[in-house]
Image 1 (tube, helix red, strand yellow):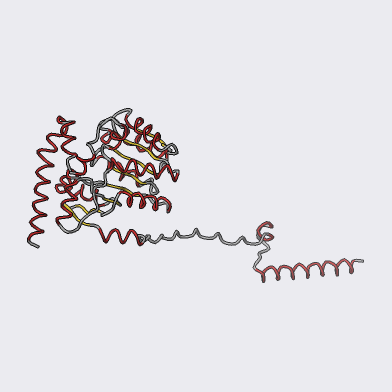
Image 2 (cartoon, rainbow, N blue to C red):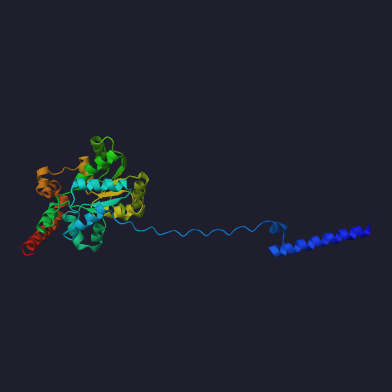
Length: 319
């Protein structure tokens, strides 16, 4: 009996030693905790993927062609486009999910740009620049680089709103005295019943110098999520605000439109059509608002326009 027990213990010991040798061969340690020896090792955690840099998208063929056609007048690069071409360009870009900035240089803007490099950079950074003032149209013709004609913010607010109504793109009106933007929205909807007005705002005077007020204006536009924003605060205030908004709204188009919101509301009268075509709208506005515009027009813009046209005429005659 004792011999059988001894043989059994010997067999058990032999099997134990064999198991220990197998565990050493396979990399397991008999002294380790049971959980560690029975649980297979977990695979290493994959390293987070490195984000790839998105290649900078090239402008489409139409944009490259338009950039090649740009003409320079009074130090400003102008796109030789009609109003309908501007509308078509904006609609096509919105369909692709792309935003942009439209600036409408006139004599006053050109004069400011000629004296301030930062303002020139602000205008040059716009996606579209179309001539608002007739002196710029005349100067381009004298330089033998004609543009089709004037394209004003006061006209674009109607034509772009019509396109926005058709394609169901919400718009936003920002600027004008209190209540004027809401009145303009009512008149735009009356002409285009399908138009979606996402919001209106009339920022207080000097809001751009107050960080809290500026942030409030910006947050209101972001919350409304429009696809087309008309900013009528005057140059360069409106274009500086547009530059700040574009960082957070890359798929929205912004139009720096000056007094267009007040014109659309009927709060300010526009010159008769014949005066606009003859380049005399400035004279009508001077007659309507002499206290506000006399110094700007007579002491600044008129001498600048005369010098501009004189220089362009001399270049035409002697080139």
